[in-house]
Length: 249
Length: 161
Image 1: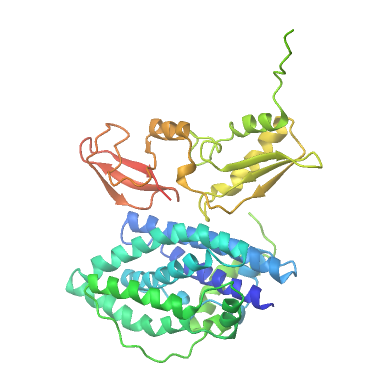
Image 2: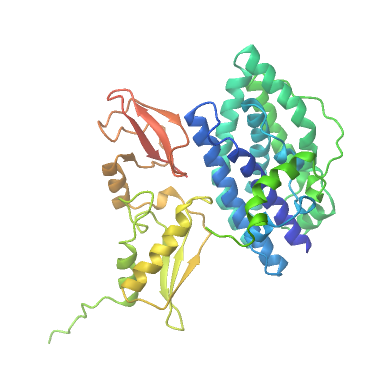
């Protein structure tokens, strides 16, 4: 697969995997408003993933459709960061995972909207309008939970400690990221990180939460090295296409 | 001498007319033209009509239904051959909803989107401005949930994006 197709696939898989995780909340959220909020966010993310997957398939040029890429790839071929595939846990963990990724997508899409790749720029410009309200939702909940009761505060702080090391991968620039940045397709990840950390630190202060210490990290979902959780998620997500190849509805 | 002015609509005008009858499946009060989903209609060199449509929200499940409805409406109006083309840029904005569309939304009970206004939306039932946002997410991707503190009714508002 070409560098450009792999890069687009990384973006697609982040949205697809996170969207699938959020979809697991449907019917289980603490209140109907949150059920709708998480489901609507999932729907936007899967919609963004479809646009990106279709484009990755076109660049690849082997005739794979968005569905082929979503439902017929193995775990090691998924290029999402490991953070996206982490299980939902409690509502607080879901919100922490969400806010960290929403802020990342917000900073990334704003810059990708001026990408030298016109198709990617169009998808990013469209997606960022949705990511803005996703972030308002997750940031609003992080503030309420962080600056809430002792129990809610302890839960989100512990989720933050757990997920913080997994954010390293979002900004760890490898050869592919560098090649895309040099071609003017993607922004430099250190620039994205600088904007992300400002946004997150301001939010944590408002939510009376403590920024965890930075730690080293060695997972690379964006190169296909995943945690054990992705396989279980894909088993469920891909079941229908694996059991009934080519089924449509 | 009076020059005869043709009253027969051109193929492009007829297409716009046919498209104005295509309802949004989630908002049957509005047509896809009211919503600003139809970006352009043109006749191409091979005589096929090219219809450019833009999705409202990336994940909106109505998008595919709209494409099918458009094909049906154009076929029924005898406007084949035609081609549908998805246009992503510039990204759809709620600013593209026509004045007529906004009136229809309000009459249907959905507060229309208002750009750059800090004012809470007026209740579509009693016009009170004493309203609160309950949730930024509603029954479809394009709507948010609000409530009126005067008539105590909940209502939906079209999101401003």
